[in-house]
Length: 480
Image (cartoon, rainbow, N blue to C red; front, side):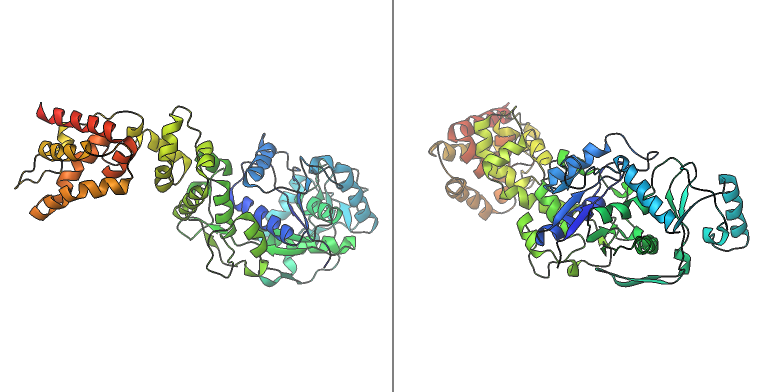
């Protein structure tokens, strides 16, 4: 087959969200697998809706994910410029071609006249079709009036979608739509067709909202004497309830919020790839190269895909654990904490934190005891004492203190557990309180936290001397 060319062509009307990013990802994967070209084009012809800063945001979002374009905005290429507002002369030249071929004409109506025609159609309970009011003669188009496409062959439109199979639309889908607006800018319906022709786009990944407009696109390709690209319609991304399209109200975020919340791009790419595509195997975790090798449009589903925050968190946790300790600490970016201690507890962060934001919070919370000596309270130290067979926390800590004093300075958690568990097991044999009544005050004395690593891990990482000091402090607190 001829060389594959795909494109992602967002409008700069706000932040990048998961729906748009997934479309870009699928277009990128499809092109990369086939050794083709992926283009980034910005469709900025709707100036009223344009949001300042959106273009840099789009570029930054895609680059963070590792989705790089072969040509396009911020990269250049043989079809530059890739910003539609800088391609107006091209659209005008295509408009003139259509006028000369009898496929376009100047719209003679005012807004008020159009409004009246629409109201009449509504009163008659009929769909408004401009072609039914097409003037017999028109003035030459000078750019001050909208330019409309002239539908010459009104018929049912049938086409094949690479994901959804055969699709069709009735005659009412074909109407005399606007090509050029009176402000001099082309409409989306016109500009994207011109650009796809000029850039040699062979495959278009798109959302289902574009299905209803496809007959217009196809009629325009036919009028220009060009073959249309192959269309692949992506499944809608549903909100957490699985019933409606994901929206801001349901938690759709600016993509870069995930970065600020401590997600990895590897996790987002992996998760979004599987949000509507099934590899046909049991494999769940994919590198970018593995996704490129496995991606197949034939396995993109038609039904909507539910966005699951818990699943994304789990996937992010997986990819965080795959990082080397050095890379993990680099991304953790916690310069306020002692680097040597951070290196000692990196494995604990990897086990517990699902995002880097969670990891940083742990440094000041359940893992804060490795940086600052705790301030336990007597009441919490006694929290696990059995009521009907009191085992005072003070007695438990004194018994454990003797065992900890006998430990070498450098031990593994397993070795510490082997040394201390016989004491806890002996208490367990007595019943009513058991191990918990003994190990709880020990863990709390060492960490000062109700949630923390187990006491054996704490002692191994703190060292015997520091552990002895903290246990003695707790005993003294109970004795007061």
